[in-house]
Length: 528
Image (cartoon, rainbow, N blue to C red; front, side):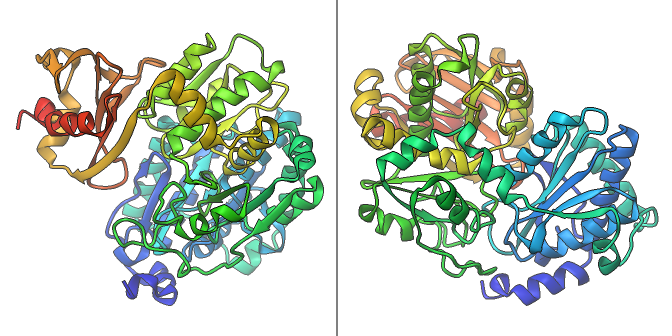
């Protein structure tokens, strides 16, 4: 553990270790650790050049917005990327004064630029491993639509980067960092003011201001830490940032459930510091290091992400009159079916997708998807006038929405979930468990079809349907989901970034039924 919290070792390994794994883009770009040889300078050189080649091939000639978060590997990777981009004459906008940049701000800046510049479109890169441990690094590409790159784009970048690595990086253009930073193609820009000034287009800031509610915020040492004071000053919010530390070891973080340091704002273990202070505030929240996730803390504790998404949708569908009627609510198929019940209660459509925020991008751009979210506490929604806000997850607006909900209704989101949604739709018990997965099990999952499962019941309930594709876009889910007659379900899929299996279960019969489903689910799929 000491080695993995040694920032000097983490950074020196970035420049010195040999590659022990090729470039691999999962659902959120390329991730790895310099200590393992899976994220180092050679990877980032190759990825950055591959991205330049992709831009040239697809005639993307506008600026590239480049940002990084507070992980130890993010600044070294930022410098490497800028060296390559400048050598390739890419116009790059970076946050002025060496300021950190949250993921949703990169999405916002891309969309704002492209709103008025149609001929030379902008794109962006955010260097972050999200909520992962301090020794990890990550590199994500957002094309001109502002959201996560789809598989066709990431396949090109991945293959081209690995070609460059196999050729010992001989095809890479690069100049020294000092020269790249001062190059005519590198532009420092204020990313904070445009984003903060536009927040009133998506959040009812005046209602929050008038309510005078007391807000507690733990940025968890993340990239959005210097956004909260400008937000408070502009809109007159009563905000207290309870932790203003930037520490690349994240030593202030309580260990997560497995003893690792992980800045997961949906984990009650990682959020323990803010939960202890919950009763001091009317509403509180935390965000992960790149601010694309949110963790909502009410005086009675941390909300389950699925519960908060359900309340957010319930509230927005009643308080955004300009959204219109012909819209859908997007959700990943492993998110709670409480969301389905809420949406159907308003006679709206559900757009259900596989895991990955990229599936929502086109619907957000077209204003057809008003809100979309993932069970892992990532979501975004449209501006009040129905126009697109961001096409990537935005932890700022989901957190501020919790304050708006309290200010407008007089109830916390947890009170609304308990007193309104549960009383109307029931009380599902939802939990995900992770475990190891064998190559044989991966093969079985990839070959499973609805017809290959012959059972008609599970845990004493009838099997209503079996899915290997999402209902919203008919795309493969990378696993299987089994729906039961009382609304309960389970889904199994391999992780896209780690050698493990994810088993999601939601029971409408409490924890006892959840356990029965858990005990029978693996046997149903793998015939153990």
